[in-house]
Length: 441
Image (cartoon, rainbow, N blue to C red; front, side, top):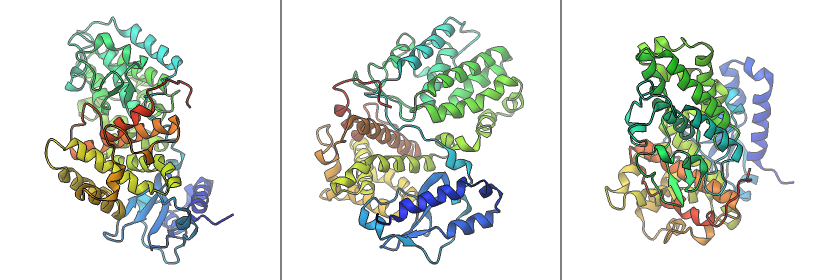
């Protein structure tokens, strides 16, 4: 069996961090231990399997470490060697321990694989049991939900909807998904997308918090508690589906202390710091689920990493998943800006979050119409044959990771996501719409 430096070192670091003694080491001792486990690829690039149980590479141009999925080419992986002289490792890249326990769930979208029937029915029960509450006792604050629902809809309906959209990894749903259709009577306008796919925006944590905090500020403490209980009960149901599970677990961790001690957030409400109070209650092993709300840049990096991992199948066809991911990112950027401002403005804001190799690939695909990477771009609404997923499981994951990446770069650059969907994720849809299957996991 051939040596594979990346597989070997990942296994070694996981064993190291999983040892109970890891938690007793000083920061300096942990840094020293990690410095002895760096790799160098034949081109001289330094790699480290570090925080969040993911790989980082040292950018030789700016001297910074970047989150970066590792190469998959067998020749590169077998030629990788331990680095004899290690560069400085920033402490945030050193595994803390709990970050290695984070379970990422599924990157599949909700197109093709239905939400399990048991989950759907339990959410419907929650919605129906809270739909008749009075609007004067449960008003609907803020623009986020007002842009979705009719003017007479109450906050419990928004609490269920908001929990679903906050917990979803990539809220792209089949147009016939029952989990959406049960909200039809409450909507104030058609959802974005078409009959095939509804391309929905994620609900920010601020919007969920505002439902609860508004009731506390108004002195309606019991109503506030009803809303938090409803969010927690909805999250408890959703965690049965791996596409919701990580964030559902995090939301439960943030809300359950309120249910146990209803007064716990009263000072935070008075100081306008409820969001911070909720985030502070998220345990370290679930912190990755809140990254979207804490750091749009880091969230973008992780979404791009997810996309590269999903594209692993193209390596068996002689293609580089990292360059392919950069090409698909360029395709989405160019498509969004085709009728508006130049795409270069958005790309300029993304470059600092990419490693040197990905920056060059993104720039080449955007700036050179004849560059080979443009051969990865969708054409006439379809993926190129070389990028077609090998099966429907992979297609659903590609749609989900591509859509999550699109939402992430739009958030980072302040760009409005296209209501008709991004070019890449839309081009995956034909691989999924021919038949439905709710037993994919």
